[in-house]
Image: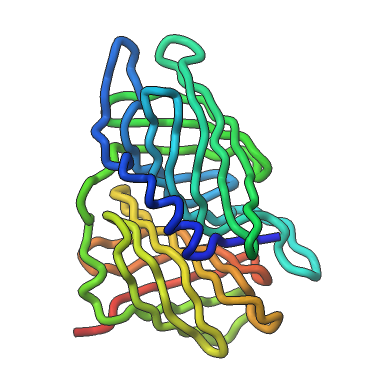
Length: 259
């Protein structure tokens, strides 16, 4: 079942994530210790902010969608949405890191965990990981996390979203507002035809944005949607692609209200 954490789970977990903006540290081996901005490609796509600690822990947040899905009459069966990440890492060989990360979401009042195993290498300005889990292989491309907003999105009164599914003659239009939670990470609140939603927007310095939505439990409206794609810092426009519970491919455009 597809799930998205409610705002409460992020409020609880973000309270302890002040470490996200600790600077990268390099010791005898080339170390991943520090905060990273990661873009995911492969069977899982998205944006993750992830911190490696000296004590072998890793923690972070992310917004994920899927490149390939299995669907049935009840909708799409794989996990996508917003996640809190917890895991561990170590040096398997010189300058080679390995570990696992658990992706935590919330269904109603119950927490659900899905996990990846990963291996990779770190350099002072680059982190590359390959992970393996239930969606298949995922590639992580990372750069040091920027400590300030890459672009100010809160000064726009509203954003317009256009969601176009295959076979639909006209895009579904949505209007939403953004509230900053931490640099490059926003809470989303808005509505579309017949529904309202909350969610998250995570912006990567690699010019990628990931948007998640939770729309409630009405059977007439897909409950969860996530989109990932290119983002232009100057125009604040995104050309994204993702899915919801009923549609495996949706093209999504987001743009600020005209001044």
